[in-house]
Image (cartoon, rainbow, N blue to C red; front, side):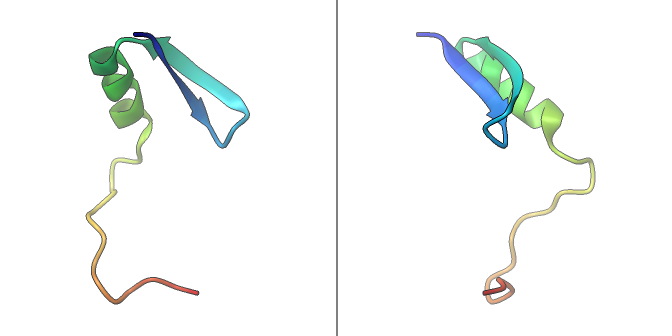
Length: 43
């Protein structure tokens, strides 16, 4: 199966197998991303 990775429904980032697209997603995340902390959501 081929998966497609897009950013904000507008920018095509790539396509490939599950492992390939996981690498694309991980590569597109900011370097300083951290896990969510319970109780800190807005809205």
